[in-house]
Amino acid sequence: MEKNLPSREKKNKKKYKKRKVIGIFAGVLLAVGIGYGAYLYNKTSNAVQKASLSLARGEKSDLREEVVKPITNNVSLLIMGIDENQERQKEYNGAFHTDALLLATFNKDDKTVKLISIPRDTYTYVPIEKKKDKITHAYGRGFVKNGKDGGPQASVEAVEKLLHVPVDYFVKFNFNSFIKIVDDLGGIEIDVPIEFSEQNSKDEPEAIHLKKGMQTLTGEQALALARTRHIDSDAMRGQRQQLVIEAILTKLKSAGSVTKIGKMIDAVDGEFKTNLALADMLSFYKYGLNASIEKIQLAGDDLYLPNGPKGERVYYYNPDTKSLRELSNILRIHLGLSEQQIKKEDGEI
Image (cartoon, rainbow, N blue to C red):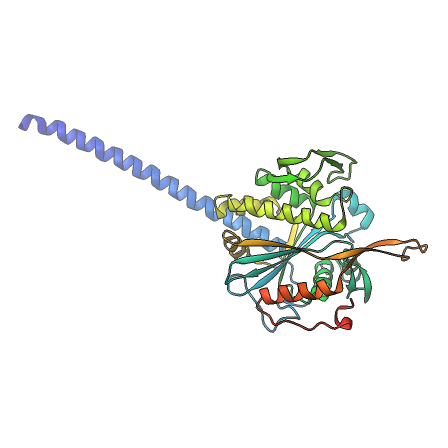
């Protein structure tokens, strides 16, 4: 019995050494993981700081009594997709248009989101121009009048004037950042409504061809589906943009971790602008994990007016006055605000 003691001691020492090695290895992995997480957080934080753009009005919407924060309050977010690329930079010299304009309202109590798409050709009063025009022109006019940071402010003002709803936050993306987001998520699942061909982000004609049916779209393909104006109406185009946004949010939910979101933000470093802090972005992400989304359309009719340079007819999307007022109050109630009796002169509608 005593002869076996040395061998037992050797075995115990081996087990102790093995546990010690495993413990050290696990500690190293944990340290590396924490270090990488901190590194990624810092990179993401730097990307968000670089993207930070305060509106000239300040933090608070003119339609609010005080500043509101995601999760703590009911808030709204304006998503702006800008038709910006290198080729158009030469043509527009920075005075781009909003190719996609969507307003989302978030209700913290019932965990719901209302998402409205505003057609780019919507005929409305544009404050920066002090007259009625296509809402897509607000961004470019703001840039021309107030410099590179004037575009988002002008678009926010135009949307608030149209809907009589405060715009608390905004995110502005260009073509490249949209493509990178979708590609970084591994593509998005979309039921393409019809077979069509469309130009790509570099404006190369018919470079993208999609068949009808459910499929996984790359960033370029998703952009083509959201942008094309040749397969249906301006209003239907807005519905397709809503589907794309919803598909992105669905994919974000399955991304698995905040780290994945951090990588995505880092991927679009320098190609987006927002007045959201990183903490606000993470709050929106957590909020969206369990929120249900209701997609709403802006009802209206086609309108042609002789507003061209030589008096030629120009196309507009004319919102239905009654529906617009009803929509305004639906969004206001969702934000916890009182209904508003909108006079014609208030909304210029």
